[in-house]
Amino acid sequence: MLISARSFDEYRAMFALSDDDLGLRILDCPGGAASFTAEAGERGADVVAVDPQYGPDRHLLGKLAEREIEHKHQLLVEHASRFVWDWFGDAERYTRLRVESARAFAADIAARPDRYVEGSLPRLPFPDRSFDLVLSSHLLFSYGAQLSEEFHLSALLELVRVARREVRLFPVVLHTSDHPYEALDRLRGALDGWGVPSRLDRVGYAFQPGGDEALVLDCAGHAPLPTARPGADAGDPVRWRHLRAAADQGGAASP
Image (cartoon, rainbow, N blue to C red; front, side):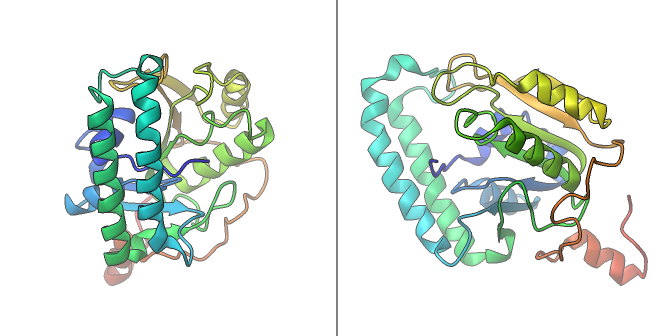
């Protein structure tokens, strides 16, 4: 799987993030080498990224992402007709923005390592309802040819477990064929059975033909999940601002 380096502005477009959304506690899963956590943090947002690559070699990710971006540039130039350029404009701007994002990520993970947590789906190292909003891009559905339907369901349930309000996933098409993930309706039906309604929202961003929809899961009032989700009793590796504030006040965090 590729190491992506998407920007704050790209995230805002992919997930239709409003100013109010950026006032919530947000998880980026998987974060890759995106600069969203870095740039959102500079704006005062409370964002954490989780990724299996945030282990001992995390300091290499930025450079690895840059190499991948540079390698991809010529492919984008040669096959430009395969992509939608409304948002990026052209391959040169695409490459420039991605390189800038990779460098911002590298600087931030060195300066604020507590905001980058090692972990991977379908087991995340966070307690239930740790975040208001969970964002997930270019893993589920994108790699539908490589990841089983069972993995998708377990991963979606895990994202729901750690979310208080919403999970937003983008895109819902395969990265190789631009076709919608074939089991999407079955997964939505299964989630609906546990009280997790969903909808498809069209967003103002696309890079793949037909890839301009985000799946939004409403996590506010779901029924108990089918099993005790892995990681439900895990210790919280991040010192959340809202939990610290509640402790200082001698009470529990608000629901």
